[in-house]
Each structure stands twice: as C-alpha cells, then as structure tokens.
Amino acid sequence: MPRRSRAPTLSLPPAAELDLRAHGIEQPGRVYANLAPAALIELALQRNEGWLTNTGALVAYTGSRTGRSPKDRYVVGDAAKPGDIWWGPVNRPIESARFERLHVKVLDHFRDRDVFVTDGWACAGPRHRLNVRLIAEKAWHALFTQCLLLRPPFAQDPSLRASFQPDLTILNACEMHADPAADGTRGGIFIVLDLARRLVLIGGTHYAGEIKKSVFAVLNYLLPQRGVFPMHCSANSGAAGDTALFFGLSGTGKTTLSADPERRLIGDDEHGWADDGIFNFEGGCYAKTIRLSRESEPQIWNALRFGSVLENVVIDPATRQADYDDASITENTRAAYPVEFIDNCELSGRGGHPANIVFLTCDAFGVLPPLSRLTPEQALYHFLSGYTAKVAGTEAGVTEPQATFSTCFAAPFLPLHPARYAELLAQKLRQHGSQVWLVNTGWTGGPYGVGSRIRLGYTRAMVRAALSGGLVPVRFAPDPIFGVLVPESCPGVPPELLRPRASWQNPADYEARARQLATLFQNNFQQYAAQAPGAVRQAGPRV
Image (cartoon, rainbow, N blue to C red; front, side, top):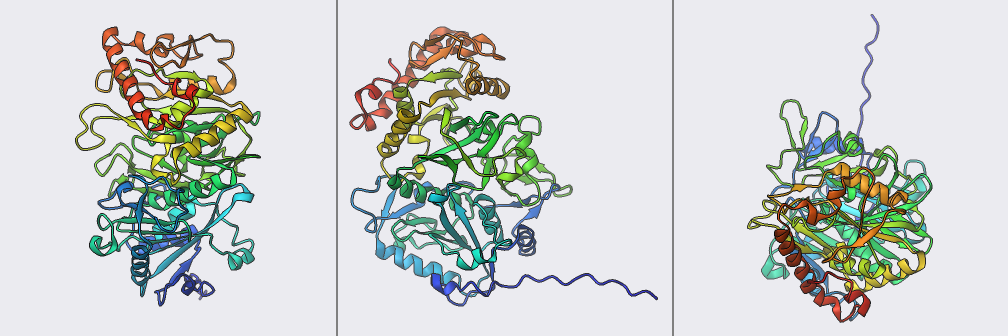
C-alpha cells in the first residue's frame, strides 16, 4: 500500500535576533518581524483582524475612526528648535514630560502582547533614504505598512536585516487609549511626534492612514533642511521621460489621474524634489475606493488582489465580493497596495525635473474653469491657498458647498510654516521652468446639486493635452474674475465646457457664485499676505 504523502508543517517563528528592549519594550509576547505578506495575512485571519475578498485582498475595519484624527495630533514642543514649528491647530504642542509618561504607557501596553514589526525605507532617492520601523499590535497594520514603505530586499540580502537601524520609530498601540487629564490629550486618541528623537506614538485609533501620514510629517520637517522640497502629490512620466506632478487634496483625483495607462506611475501621493529630480517617498499607493469601477480606473481595480489591504470596504458575506459603491461605513473607503501592482509603474520610484505640474481642485461651486494655465505668481498663490470644496453629505452639518483651503495642498502634515514650502516651490520653478496648470475636477453648469460633475473622460483628455504639448498652438484668454489663462479649445473636450460662465443657464447666478468664491480666496490669503511678494499677492482672483 503506497505511503500517503504528508503536508509539510509550517511555523511562524519569532525573530529572535530582534531585541525590542532597545526600544524599551520588555517581555512582549511573540515578536513577528518582517514576515512575508502571505504570513501576515494568515495571522490576520487567525486573529480575526479581517477577511479575504474574492480577489484575495485583506479587508479590515477600523471601528469608530474611519479617517484621520487631526485634532488629536501633537508635537513635542520643548524638544523642537525655537521658531521651527508652525504652531496652531495643525501642530498642537505637548510637553516632553507628558510625552514621556505617555511613552511609558505605550511601552507597558506591549507587555505580554504579540508584536508585529515592519522595517522599510522612506524615500527612493538614496541620498535621502530614511529607515523606518513600525512596531504594532495588529498584523494587518504591519501588512499595510509593508505595502506603503519601500521594501528592503531582506530575503535576498540577510545582512540588510541584521544591520537595519531605524531613523524613525512608530509605536502603534491602537487598542490603548490616553487619559486626557494625566496625558494632556484632547481625548483617548493620540498621534504624537517627537521630531528630535524621531519617535511617533499612535493610540486609540485603528485607522492605518495615521501611520502613513506620520512618516510624511517627519519628512516634511527633515527634508527642507536639506534643500529638498517635500510634496503632497502624485507623479508619473511619459514615453519621452517627461515627468508630471499632480497636487491635490483627498478626492480631487491625484491617484486616479496619475494612474494613466499611457504613462508610467512613479507614485500616487508623496514625493520629494531634489537637485537631481523627483523621488517617491513610498513603495505603495493608498487610494480612495468609493465608487471605484473597472471601466474608469482599471489599473487600481486590478491592483486590489492578494497582498493588498482594503479599509472599511463593504463585502458580500456570501461571495466576499467588494461593493465599492457602498458608503454605509464611510465615504473614505481605502486600499493600500505595493506600487508594482500597477502594471506600468516606474520601479525606481524616481523621475526627472517635472515639465508640468497640475494643481487639482474639486470646485463644488461650479465656477472654476476645468483647465487653466497659471503664471509662476499664480502658481504660488494657488499653492499657498490649496483650495477645494466640501459638498453636502460628506460631513455632518454640511448642507451646501463649503470652501476648504488647505495650504500647500497638505496643511495637516506640515510641521513648518507654509512660507518655507512656498519658497522651495518658487526656487524649483525658477530653476526648471515647469509649467503649472489648474484642473477643476468638480462641477460644471451650476453648483453641487444643480450642475453635474465634470466627466472623468473629459478631465483625462485635458490633462493629456496639457502634458503632451497639445495645447501649445491654442490661444488662451484670462478668466475675468479668477485671472487664470483658459484655453479656447482642447482636443476631445466640448468648447463650452472650458468656459464655466457659458455652461450656466443664468449668467447672473454664475457671476454671484464666482464672486463669492473669489472673496473667500481673498479672505483666506490674508494670513500669508505679509510674507508673500507683491506679485504673488496680486495674482489671486479679483472681485
């Protein structure tokens, strides 16, 4: 009788060579360090941290916090250099003594708990590389971080693992809550940055975006000191090697428009601009998935497979099929995946100096042109403004369009004053002559609730024309209120769409709305007027 073959016994041993006592963590449970994605997924499923979709993606749910908690973010104040930090609602100070007490609580929280460690790199530019270590209590947070960081080839070069020393350490104790009275926090949630020690504490929230954006905030602090411009933007390159950048707030189209089958994706969210060109901070993408479709965004759709992580996406309990149209948990459904899951990605994570820069805005007032060209002065004005709009239904109490100004398209992540980043942009524009465009992906023919959202196909056509030089022979005319230069035509786009005034049924209604938004621009810019050159102050809308 033939012997029956026996399946091999697999185990997940702790990484004995990684001693967490160097981080102050005494007597943890098992330490799982730098496991393969499949092993992390197995552990996440065993620990009931998530489910698999029918395409193999891991789905995790973050509970009551389905987005970032900006009001619960703090910076250790007395550890920073005097005058260094842009103090205010974005960067709230916390005393070193309170930070230390909270740090001790976090370290004690890990006692007797299984711990997951992910080591990776931030910055594809080798001269600016940052070694990042995440220590977390959830396997899926380790997988998320592995998706987003650049992944050192530990398997091919074990010496890298042995020699890895973190430049930045993130302790994610998501199940632990702060005591506001004792810890000096607003509530139980905390994201605290000690920029001097390069240490981040996260607790009280399962939302994985806090990990990603903590790394970004630290880089926004460190890189300007080296003359590198950190940017909240996506990037891609064309067949001729021409690089394009896409700045914009969440929901304006950074990820969608940069994932273009005709161009190579460098990265979807965070980049640096150095003397030798641009480089991705990350090794993966973090895309919004609400109303994602195979037809409109095939590259992202195909990336959501085994090894990727979905956040708060509703799945069918029987088929495990994701329903990307279901916003019952949150509008902010997300997906994290390695950048190489995009078919035509640029694996080096690097590109040349950008020939074109696109500022994306989602104008719910329906008055900004869908495409316009900016002068360098207008570019700095709109960079400092960082305009987009909230629409009804996205937040409690929002019943009509509300202007949102997030300076540098990145206010929640900026430790330094916005003027520092604007100076870096101005310097780069002078050196390299990049053309800046303003693209409105919002409404046309009227405001939200009256007009319609600009079709993605038209927006893609406008962006492709701008990047390819297809608008060089086209005449441009200044918008009478916003001053930006609007093309008279664009291949593949109806001419009337290019002029918002013509798309409204009642010109008087358009005029009133446009002047309302122009006034909001002017009022917002007052906070930067003292530090902006006169030509930049004069580059905004006129009422």
